[in-house]
Image 1 (cartoon, chains in turn cyan, brown, purple, red):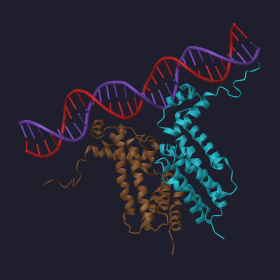
Image 2 (cartoon, each protein chain N blue to C red):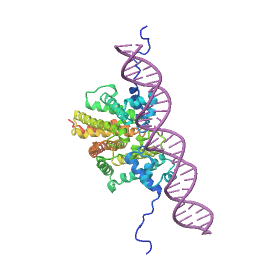
Image 3 (tube, chains in turn yellow, brown, red, orange):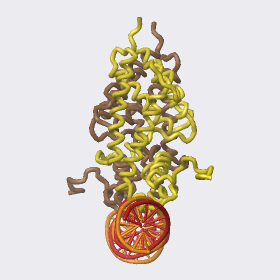
Image 4 (tube, each protein chain N blue to C red):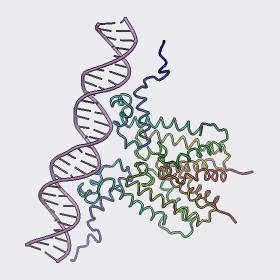
Length: 198
Length: 198
DNA sequence: TGACAATGTTACTGACCGGTACGTATACAC
DNA sequence: GTGTATACGTACCGGTCAGTAACATTGTCA
């Protein structure tokens, strides 16, 4: 036997990676301030010094969480439900459909980036800075898609969609069966009213 | 001389009231978890035992903050800009106008109730419970106003307005000059598209 | 004057927080 | 083997957190 049949590609998983995964889950579910570094390392099955070898501080770990979240977001946004879309209208509607389905379910926690902005009002916080940069790009992307839909005022439709989506993030964690139920209908209304007919 | 010219109506201000005021300001501006009880009492100019004579715990103080915020909110919502409105459409638009003006300014911190929901995901948290109850009522009130506008589907228009407003709260604290700029335009679009013409 | 209520003063607790000094195990190089 | 680098753990630090015990002080009303 060469290498045994077990462990085909499962490397030991670096401590830093385990910590990132653990932090992402805990920070998202419970909030960043609510989770101590001890809890993060315990869940990761490592020890505290391992955390501080890879991350300068808890704030920097939070920033890493933001970057991971950002990456994950764009994957979900650009391929909602695992599919890719060429039509801008269908693209956005698909994202909102998937999102609002999640958002009316129990335990939904909204957008990790928006939540971090609530937890850290100070502009110089590393996590917040990642979140702010993300939101700026997201706004630009939505304007782009609004343009692709043929909106009379792409900036306005882009903003409208952004406000709607952030509204879903927010209300989704305030109650189950919240207004996110109506999100797809509202989005259609918004788009149709913004796109020149004929 | 009777009572001297000074102090016309400024009673000493009960410790509990000073604490409520101090907590409201600090909790709103910096977040509840970010502010310690020591900071609250110091700003109030009182001492810690005074806090715990009037409030059972920090969580209960936070709940009191939520109730104060709730009261303040309804005053602002029902009389936007200090005026009262009989027309539902004008009423909602006036609120959104005032809100979005605040929301594009530096240092805006969104809705204290929504923020508390982000900080405390656990359903049994006292502050969160007040916030959840508030949001339920707010949704109902918006549906009522949508009905007053003559919407074809008041539930949908109510939800649309709620999603929009929560979107303003959220994006307003993510950046200055955010999408809240477009909020009034979007609200008009939404209302006009939802109300039967003719 | 005396009694009561509200508040301040001081000092403390135990738990938890973020962060670190320092020792240890493994693996590969020579 | 011995050196060396990497990756990790044990044990601890000082500070801050929410919350409390015991007592002193004040103002008010009778």
